[in-house]
Length: 513
Image (cartoon, rainbow, N blue to C red; front, side, top):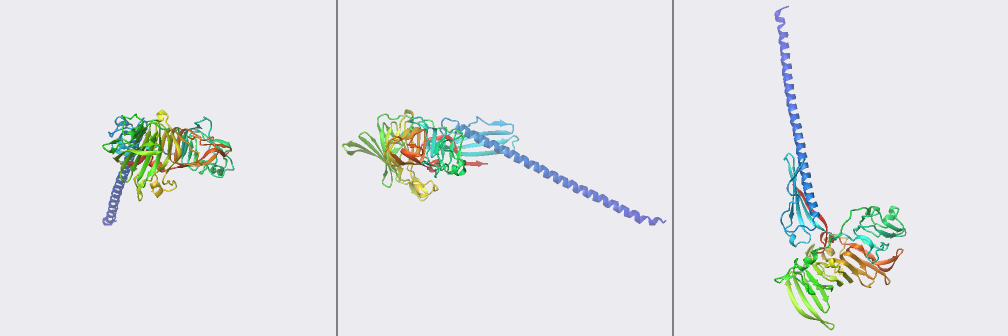
């Protein structure tokens, strides 16, 4: 065979080997690039996961710090005064997962506010120092005007015996007891007793003569059925006795007058508090034409009329002396500004009645509220006695939103006393406002006379021991009044001025950065 015949074959083999080598190198390069890309993607994924973990840890630490600040606030006997920033944790705290700190920043207007506000700032940083998060919560003291009906004990404040709800009673709104409810009910009932949520620290209710068994039965007691009734709830403490209302009415924490009379604190012709009364009195609320409210306070032969001009931001105080059946004007004083809404009496208010004038409102806004808290010296067991209707000129409508015209116009009232007593023989009685009785709320004639109609309340009743308002046999009322209690939802966000608080705080805003 000729040598020249092999050369083409040898050349073709060389070209194939070179092509295979180039292909292998290219494939290896592509694999290396793909591996590098995959590794980069994996590393980025790990980094993102770590970043998310660190961010989540920092956020959890910040939220925990803000919650700790809120718990510190709740634990205080009184809300912190002043405007200085507070460190509730005593510096930065360290955990295995990171570090956290907290601050409590009082609202600048707290000095003049009865429900104090604070901004709680919680800061958290993960243990690597890669992420820091801040949580800000704005909180405000929660008013106790949250219930249509509240008791600490479901026993009579008069006889210490059991008191029952009966089929003729109607309670619209939140109901709670720190005790056990006693409900007189039978299967012939057609209308519910409770139209809102009902809660009890007791593990069950006491039923007589029958207990509801079916879903239909339960709806004849609770409009929302069995699910509307919660048992075994946490105990809710009544407000402790404080000087909040006393100090607010006087406009100071010292220098209180001791001579019997009516005082409207003022500095330089400008109102500087509420109305401070020394000694027993009777009080009547009278609309002051179309511009405001008059609170008429009588002590013996002396009458003091405190009249507000809500539109004109002015107050007039007139003192009258009684001669025979006539009241003769003695003095007149005019002031700039309005009382802050607290009428405090060191004695008993032996008669309270009247009508509260409308707020000043413009369109969907309230320009000036006509809101009052009438209170007595609870520490010395002073009472308020209601002798006739105590009502708003315009009745609120709880079934309508807050910007409904009647809800914008309706005034606001709170009563705070040792006992709040209804003492009238009228067939029906209406009380607009939230009643808080450190002892009880009851009808003076609960077990005498003939059966009456309904005792209607638009607001709520809060009391330690349950006071009787009527007496029944079976499910039939035989003396006193049946209950017609309607919760006023305006009370939750806009309670009466300087009304007692629960010791808890409402969160009104939340931000995470």
